[in-house]
Length: 96
Image (cartoon, rainbow, N blue to C red):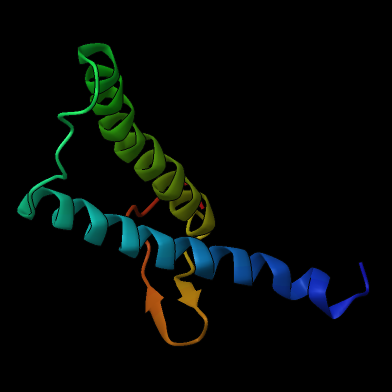
């Protein structure tokens, strides 16, 4: 409890998570705009499995990162990303 890292590790974790969320959105836009590589050498089963897994990762990763963001801003404070910029809370709660 007395280590400086114990106090800064959650901030680093949240900052890295927000950067990964930005990269995930960028990757998703890149995927929509650009053509995918040829999958001609795959069997129909492998092609179908690749589509399911590829498109399944996006909503799962997005839900994971957004839920972390929502938990981090639940107390009303913005999320500081390496003291470069702040991400304000999206949902205002009247219970706090």
